[in-house]
Image (tube, rainbow, N blue to C red; front, side):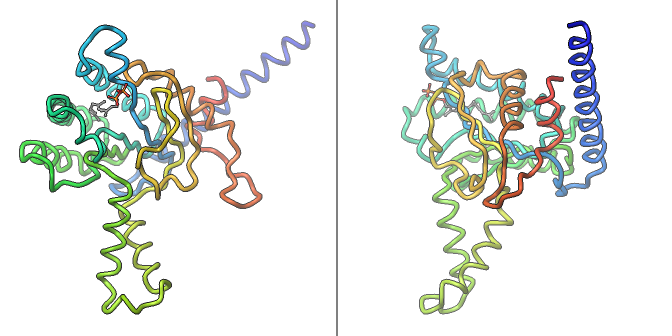
Length: 284
Ligand code: FPP
């Protein structure tokens, strides 16, 4: 009995040391990266759902849920940075969200602007590069100006790439890329699909980042037109947790679950998870 307990303690300690080692080398490798070289670490994408229900259940207006949602964004960004996540894509406003009452849309954009204005310095300090993905032609000038400033100020960040999806629709992004690829081929109407494919792939590959793990909070199990191309081989993680309640330990739980998945990308050989996920999976 005593021997068994000692062995399990030794195993736990060994796992912990392995986790720390993996984490340390993962970070050491990441710290030397130049801008644009996000070669290491995971891409985690999040559909932040449940703000409205979180607020309604507390007898609060829906905007209170979005406000609490911004606090959750801050927590998750910090933890993702510490865990060596390479890229974090957050679904802040879908192209279908324009259908919401004007007042709610206004509040979300007010919060987005405030986030960009207030968090840019912190993001710079922490080596984060912020980028907004999605359509820009329907955004207000004040929002565009805040986006431009945040993107320019954080352009040199190389520890994490934070992509905020605003007025984003995956179908729209793919359609535009296809139209662009077709436009690049003169007389494409008669061209074989094989000619179009490399052009489209090039556009998609320069504008997209394959996702490793998709998290959706709020209990629903759907993709809602989010990163359909990039999610091709992503692991999907759905949780009942409402977005404003999501924090460090919820992110760790999602990565722990990811670590247990076997990824073969259509082949037969299992691909090892990233050290950031190993760290969490090892119980450290
Ligand atoms: C989904 O919850 C949430 C949104 C449509 C908005 C998300 C926006 C934020 C968290 C604030 C700004 C984001 C950043 C990156 C600073 P819902 O309103 O659909 O919730 P429900 O399904 O309970 O109604």
